[in-house]
Length: 74
Image (cartoon, rainbow, N blue to C red; front, side, top):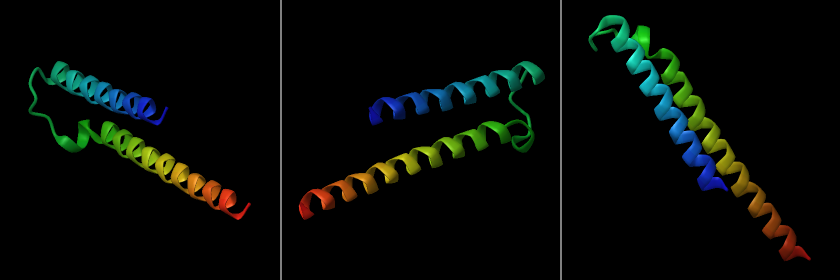
């Protein structure tokens, strides 16, 4: 389940970057555009996806540790 979610997140990040690169090339007919102007949104999206993935990973780890401690105390 987690690996499938990670694959989906990676694919969505790649699609967003490819879309913005294609849009930038279409607008300027070349790739000589400024980084700051064009790639702020996909960069923010990538950072949010990375943070979300880390948060889910650490939450699942914390939940598993708590569950194993509860099972040991029984």
